[in-house]
Image 1 (tube, helix red, strand yellow):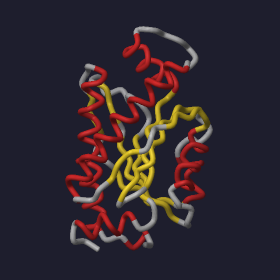
Image 2 (tube, helix red, strand yellow; image 1 turned 180 degrees about the vertical axis):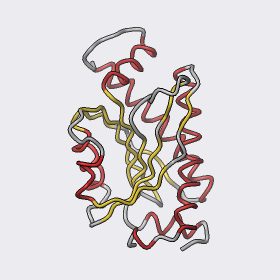
Image 3 (cartoon, rainbow, N blue to C red; image 1 turned 180 degrees about the horizontal axis):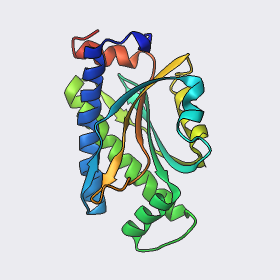
Image 4 (spheres, rainbow, N blue to C red; image 1 turned 60 degrees about the horizontal axis):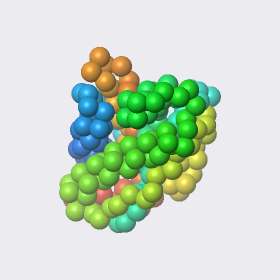
Length: 200
């Protein structure tokens, strides 16, 4: 599918899928952290692959939790935190503060990734009737551009244009709780989602 040819109705439908998934994920995150978590309206981004790195401040170092989406609509889910945010989240859940992310901290981030991505996928599954399930999460600590580029490539998206559904989670005082949450479908998955919604 050429992402540039998606119609406004198809883009709206994808935004709604992202909205339902991210709403579930924000609720799960809120319960986990025991504080109110809001979110921005999900954006459907169709961008040239070679601008990923430059567009998002690619040299900024970040913590990424990557979960593969398995089943009828495969892809990747990527949850990106700034390092300080990751350390704060680990501290709020374990009571320990460590300026480096320890093995325990990595386990905590994996569990958060698991809960959030499962919430997101369950919502998409109910909405589309497609069977999807998460893989075991992996945590990576690298430059943001490198994390994103790798995730797109692993999703089989390295054409001229790539697509993701992007949400920003916000704490009560409207500070960004992390960087971003990305759902990156593999080629073919988007057609399946749109087919279930009668929009392909």
